Image 1 (cartoon, one colour):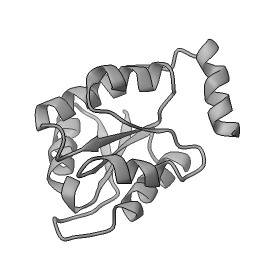
Image 2 (image 1 turned 90 degrees about the vertical axis):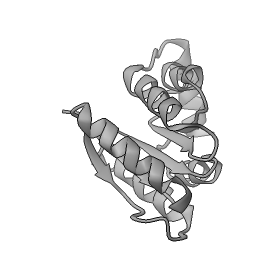
Image 3 (image 1 turned 90 degrees about the horizontal axis):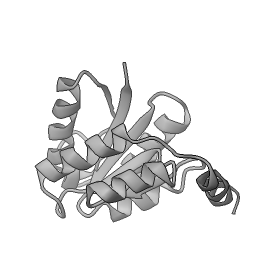
Length: 144
């Protein structure tokens, strides 16, 4: 069974809850790294929690959500070993996995709708890293 982490700030809380249910219905185990309400919180805390879960091997991949996806993706990418991609469509999700071996997906709850978020997440989880010439570039990201 796949195990996926999920986290959000207050702006992404409602979408986080919807995506948790969506993943569970698909038979995917979900680890919730918070937050647990729409009460204002600091997105870096939750981006880092989910990123640490990926690096520690608690989860295979993770999705993080804030209002735009920008702040929480920046926070997640501060954790060594994380390649968090902010995606607003399925093509970006596909390329983030195929070419960049992204291990986290960031979504903006105030930027995309629920159904698009589900479709982006499905694409992200279905795609694989193509390696080949892309591996050299991912290695450069890790070592620069």
